[in-house]
Length: 421
Length: 173
Image (tube, rainbow over the protein chains, first blue to last red):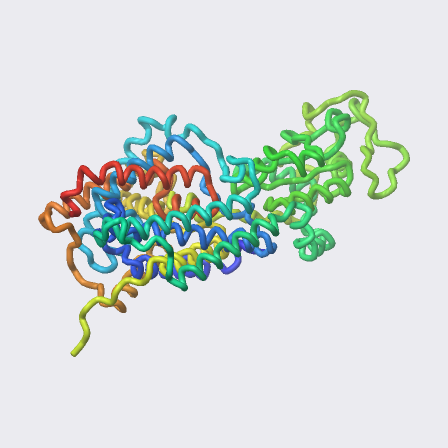
């Protein structure tokens, strides 16, 4: 399901070509809209020509409505889209600085690129200025690095801020944009064409505009009433493909592979342990954290942590056997979490390869029936992760001549880090 | 006779709709939005790397992109910026707007306009890195996925522009 990861799926060359083509379309649309002309851009700030506002907000609402409509239909996983993280105050300060730069220089970065491409000399000077500005930023950021990293709110979207549904926000943003367009037309007539206020036609009479606005409102209403899919709904949609992965055991990793990953400095392993508190306290892997199924489906902080994990993260679901971890796998995938794996055979299998030693635990004499989510070891006391077996080190694999197939493939969630930034 | 008058710009709502579709496609195909300033930063680091490679390695902010053997230009964002350039040029050629000229207000000299463009560009570049993205990467892209920070920043760009517009009105009017 979309979004795709073109570089990973098509290879670097073709993937980069996709970015190039997206860029070509972007540049062409900017140029056609008149964004290569600094006079047209700056006129926005004197209310004479509101093209900047009209193009920008039309683009935002069209893209937004399409994104959330596709998400409603299950064609696009919103949780996997890159959402610019919020650093509130630094963003506000940076925004003001950019506003000053915009009116003094007459461009913004993307539009200046188009101006350069059409040989606008002022655009070329602006672009040289940009290179200078980003250079000075790199040289001076150490002076205020704490402020620059402050106010971090992570992936934080308007529906969370207002505590209402995504669909309602989409609908209200569309209405706000339409209201802004209405006033933009009046402002243009008044400031730009100097028509006295009383003589400006106040009612929209252009049929195309009325139809387009109505279409947008309908799309927003569709988003509002169809709602956004839950983790369960999403799992249903993923089920067919994922069920095959589970059946082929592509995502069940051998304890030795997990051990290797835990000690791989280029990977971040996030171990999520779904066992009871008692079992967890008796023994767990190093840095494993206990999570309940309730937390998985309801805890917003946990959810945000999971979808904000760094790109090089491997999430491994753990239970005593596999059934619990497999259930957790489905829910995690339903939330849109990438790179999720299951510890093959669970903790029991781990302890089979990396035993805690008879001082702490002994194996049950009668084997548990297969698929039973019970600890197959009887512990004399709780050892948590303070034993060798919690992370016996990667050399153990070689020493014990453990053979296994590697299955972990790290899929990145975003390529365009920070969009512009 | 060959027609040399530039074509008129397209209707802003049509332009906006097309831009919205491009933005949507960017998210759909790549998982990220549009952008420019990140790539411009990479271009800057690559240029710096040619002249002062040691310096790039020492300043953390630059080393992240072009330190050691890393090529600052090896990034999907740079390809997108190159595409933006090509797209702008193609459209400019088709619509007969590909022409060396300076766009300015009637009451400002060409040289002064160049100077102001350079200064404005430097301020914009500084601000774009400060805000972790520019009008396209933050305001436009972040706006479409409802990022709180992007919306706050977008309003600040407009407020900042309007606040200063009166003081620099001679440049544009």
